[in-house]
Length: 312
Image (cartoon, rainbow, N blue to C red; front, side, top):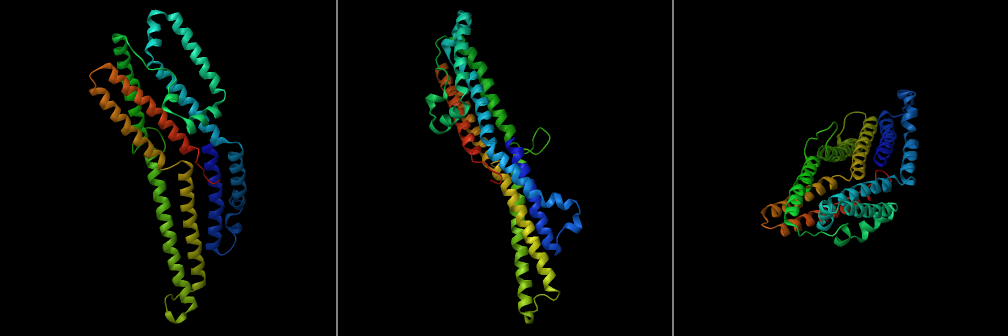
């Protein structure tokens, strides 16, 4: 909801500002040109304001971050249970006690998640490696440990790397633009339109100069309409550049893409040490590092997204 409302408010604001730029180029109001379309163009500022206030007062950004936090912490809770050797040992030897202990821990997690916002704020601002773990990592049974290591090698290392790769690929697997494509396209639009606005503004300066000093002969045509068109064009390009930068701020580009790449590099390092380790203790240490890194990455992601904004 946060992103939909943000993009919607940005679209309607852009519509109004483009209408103003076109009116400047045209030299008169766009009512005669757009007809009823003028109502939508000029009323875009009202729609943008409504959507902006709805997004802000409804705290949709916070709610979105809270939903991501709860989802990811539940996912981490499930995977971290496999690191608890004493708990997994109960599964084979005393399944009834295993179920009771898992139910107890799950109920405790659900109780904490009832205050999802408070739990998220504590996690983001005051989190530590000790607090990132729901279960105590420990193993003593070698066959049992080997089975868990084989499972987590795929469930954590491979899946985490594949997910990061999908997020950083130049082309996405689904319809629409991939993260990298959106990053590059928005940067290109923001850069070239701003540069275009500066160039057009420079031409406008020379036209105005020729109007002020006819003897310079810098411009032979009618300077007044040319100056108006150039000024309106520069405004139009500047509006497009500002809109692209607002889009990037709302989707935290390119920070999100860079974060995935850095996370992928760290997971790849842990995987290399994991595969080269000669004993189970070292392998479990790398799995602990991976879980700690996953929690740290979630913390970085939430800090980044809690600063995201489209217009206001």
